[in-house]
Amino acid sequence: MKTRVLAVGMLTGGLLLSAAACGGDDKSASSTPAGGGATTSSAAMPDKPFGPGCSAVPNSGKGSFSGMAQDPVATAASSNPVLSTLVTAVKKAGLVDTLNSAQNLTVFAPTNDAFAKIPKKTLTKVLADKKTLSSILTYHVVGQRVAPGGLTSGSFKTLQGGMVTTSDSGESYKVNDANVVCGNVQTANATVYIIDSVLMPEK
Image (tube, rainbow, N blue to C red; front, side, top):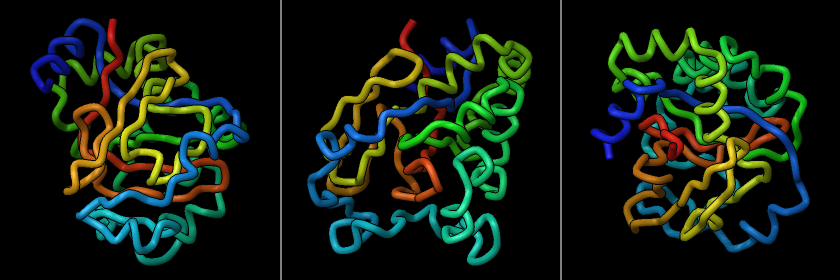
């Protein structure tokens, strides 16, 4: 999959995020109690952020979990140092207002390290291509809130139009081939799952 990601990225680029709304549907997709991600106590604490990557999130301030919960998703992400590359991409794609004004989203947010997996020349090219960048970013956004239990075995249509699949391996949650490193992070208008790879839509 990584080879495929890089190959697709070399043709058109690679990155993440965008938005729109549809809050009332999330119960049908995610009303199940949080499934057993073994990297966390998500089953025991379904309302709490979980995952090994959560330790990188600041303990206080605007970029902390409590701080992020007060702001809409694009603003919240901009306060979190783990997501600075993503925030740069969202700004270049002109998606800040779209993300912040939408309601009830799920965002699969690649870390800085996830973007670092993309060759530098490819990343630079994509950041300069607003149309391609927007398409890739919107592939990381679902127009409803999905609770951890909804990720156990799910398939969700993204704002880009493509589908992402989610699963619980018993070790961790996955989104396509990416691992959730810090999940169930709440912002004022979205549930965020921080992931370790950039997702690429099918062509």
